[in-house]
Length: 66
Image (cartoon, rainbow, N blue to C red; front, side, top):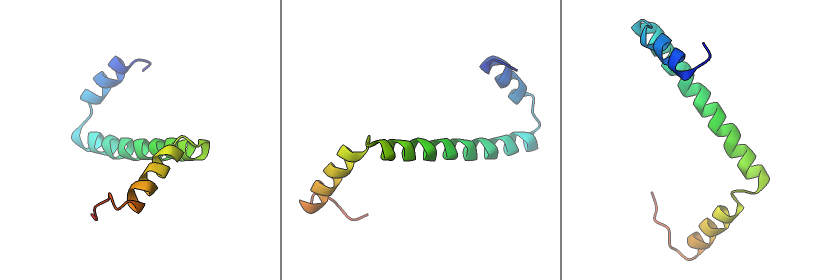
C-alpha cells in the first residue's frame, strides 16, 4: 500500500473491531505528532509572540475565567 487511495480501500474493508483499533491507534499517533510539533515550535521561539500577547492581555485584565 503506497497511496492514500489504497489505504482508504483497505480501511473500508476492515471489520468493525479492527476499524475501532485503527481509530484508537490513529488518535494516539496524531496526538503524539501534535505534541512533538508543539514542543518544536515552543523550543524554536515560534510561540513567543503569542505568549507575550497572552501575558499582556492577562495583565491588562482582558481575559475571562473559564
